Image 1 (cartoon, one colour):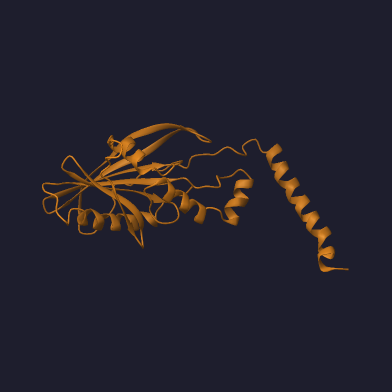
Image 2 (cartoon, helix red, strand yellow):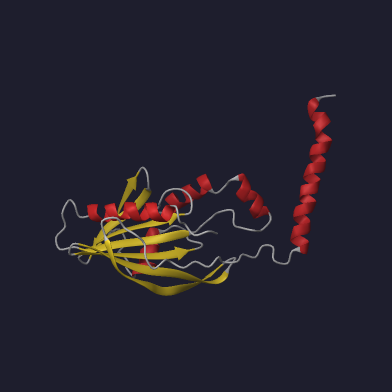
Length: 227
């Protein structure tokens, strides 16, 4: 008897038992498929090397209808830091089901929009941290990025999708997805918008923001909210 013929019956029995288990869960568990939002509140203080935190206040929740959660309040917070006479603002927003579109996040969170084909955005890449965008608007320099639950930071939808394909399609996540306990894709994000006032653009315009961003990212990447 060939080896595959010897193991065929046990494998069929194992597969059948697993199908029955999943089916029974679907039929008997009234809560299966329903997602509960894990509450998350931004801390009042976040350390930032070489900067002194001078203020912190919550931003108004952004209420969004999202499947499979229903109406969800996305929390946000503004942090302010001082270095000599320079004041740094960091606006953050936690989202459960983003598509990773940085321009849309800027419009939603900062109320800024740009004319078609006239975007001032410059997308940059750091090999250790990921991707982010910088731009200048009305005498302020900005840096914007999405901190992902897994993988480096992103700014565009394609970068976000690449992270999801690489890090989310794991065996343990697929098992929980089959049981309806979580989404297969983890579309959560901490949108981060850093900005400083700008008197005159120079080659070093973005270096201050980038240094602050690198420290900010490293702090949050190890403290991403639990799902």
